[in-house]
Amino acid sequence: MSLVELIAQADERGLAASGLACSDRCLPLLGGDDEVLRPLWTSLAEGSDWAGHLEEARAALGPADPAGTEAARLARRMLDTAPAVRSAEAVRAWAGTCSVASLRIHRLLDPAADGAGSLSPLVSAETLSPLVAAELRRQVAVLELLAEHGANGLRRALDLSVEGRRVLRAVVSRRTRGQS
Image (tube, rainbow, N blue to C red; front, side, top):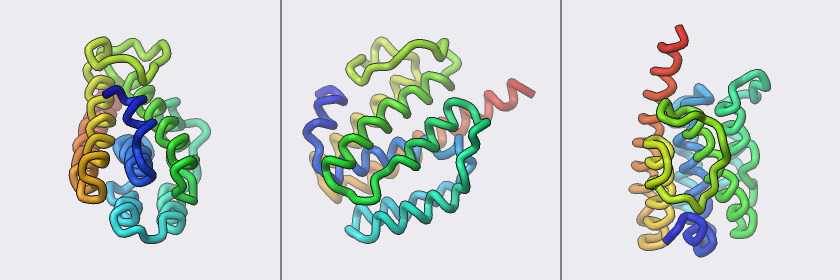
């Protein structure tokens, strides 16, 4: 099933996890602590205070840097546009926006890609550069996990996000060293 189809069929928890996972994987661009979004993951599992944890995460990351790179601005926008109310309608729009933003970020940072052009969630992993293809696979896997296992799939979805965050951190680190 395509990413677009998975987003269209996902329930509120799957959509929130999808958007959160995209934000979590892009956290290295914001210089945030790896644990800053953990309370939001807990909120998804327990049904606790999403809005409060969201505000805490935003505050912990500080104000957006308007002079930052396009990738960093996209990453920050994902968190800034997260809905305070986790309704299916609100998180569906957010999950779709986060999906596209995260794919764009990975394209911008992929040394094998030219960073130009637009991305459509309808593209297949075979036509993308390696970093973008891996991000697309992670997005699909998160939605499939939540569709198949509900709340029990959250732990594995978080694990996929941590893996993706490590990959992106390595890419950012290599780019920084290359620019020095």
